Image 1 (spheres, rainbow, N blue to C red):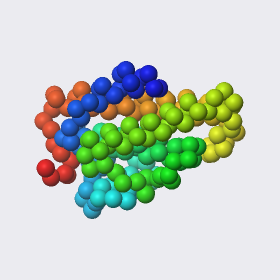
Image 2 (cartoon, rainbow, N blue to C red; image 1 turned 180 degrees about the vertical axis):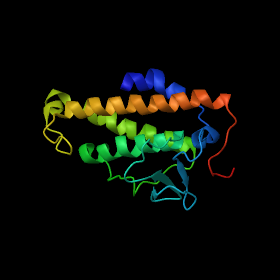
Image 3 (spheres, helix red, strand yellow; image 1 turned 135 degrees about the vertical axis):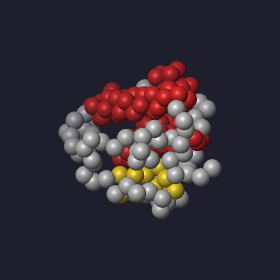
Image 4 (cartoon, rainbow, N blue to C red; image 1 turned 30 degrees about the vertical axis):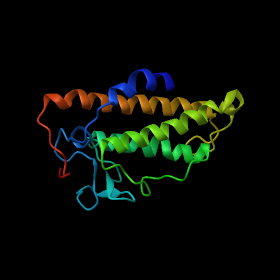
Length: 179
């Protein structure tokens, strides 16, 4: 993942603007929004911004903005795992302070990715064989979690890149954030 991040993904995220970050290409897309401005069934977060959710998830799944996708990767994919496995502070969707700007989100992403990559590098062969210890597969080896997180990062950050590719070809809307 480190080579993919350093030689492909990071460069694709450079210059991400706040308009792109909050851009909603479809009505009612889930996003990160100023507290109190969402109409989603569930809005969680500890700071001035919350992330949209619903339980159970709607069918079809809600479309999501770059802000939402980065929030999911930062918190659900990286920060919670960093806390569970590499001694980072506890993190959850409910307690996270979501970024109100693209630059802050990218800083959060880079910080969480740095913790994850350092933790994985420190596992060594023996550490990759240790059981994960968390649901849904507590007996699976840590190597399985590492592969899962790499797949999640590639999957969701590729979606972010696709939205960036679409953005210049559309009329931007800022998804409820006044600029």
